[in-house]
Image 1 (spheres, rainbow, N blue to C red):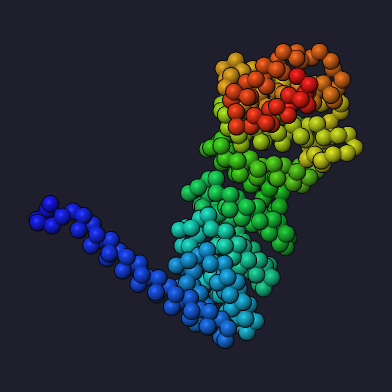
Image 2: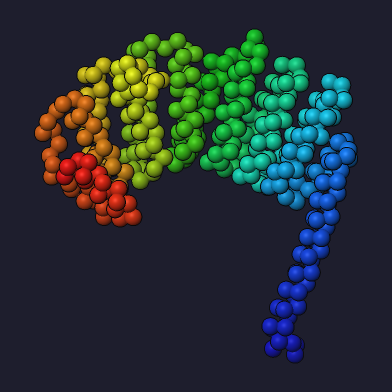
Length: 352
């Protein structure tokens, strides 16, 4: 009891007030939604645009309203002069900014924002469009400083870079842009080794970087060596990080791509001897991890997969002891028991 009133009664009163407030908010939301639906069937103007703004602030996941907004803007673009079109595009990007900050993982906001930027390219002069895309690159950088692993931000960043690259390049050094972006991934990785999106971005930039620079085979090999050294260092820092093993796999797939078939490598089509030497060295490097880390399933998965591939590709018998393969598989069973069926299948495949 407090001042003669039971605690349970006060709690019930507060809950009732909250319930009534929520019901009032729902009623207002439904009224606004009805107004929007009525307006978009008759009048595609700035007033209707303003109504969609109010509704999307309350519910940015309402993708149908984003589509209504596109229709309204297309009508306004069609009826407006170029200065008014530029003003509309800029205003909508400003409208989206606080929503993006509040809901940084909302697909519809990112999708709509990219649509607006694409309309900038389609409706404005290249110099004006480039200004909007360059501002977006700065914004995405700020968003990624808030959350360095926001995959929406990284996907948007790739689109922005491609858009800048495809715009009139007379005063735009695309090679410099790619180098800057590649350096950006290095900075983000150094800040957080677990940044899967930064590693992925790096894998996408490497082919462009090499092609734009007209890299020859020796330079491509040097790039491969540099990337392999980088990921080795990262794995010795944190062998439990899955994102590091994914990038490591990207390099291994490029190393072992076939001479005339298979995936296109951004590096160079390595000779058979080169592949053998590198894969053997990489297996030895990963085995070293076991000296200090014997409870990481990624290590055993790599050793099992690539030791078998090594024997098959280069026809080297008795390089890896069957007992070692069995021991690695037994460790996988203990470390990852939820995938027991997978390990049983692997045992049959390897005939262990």
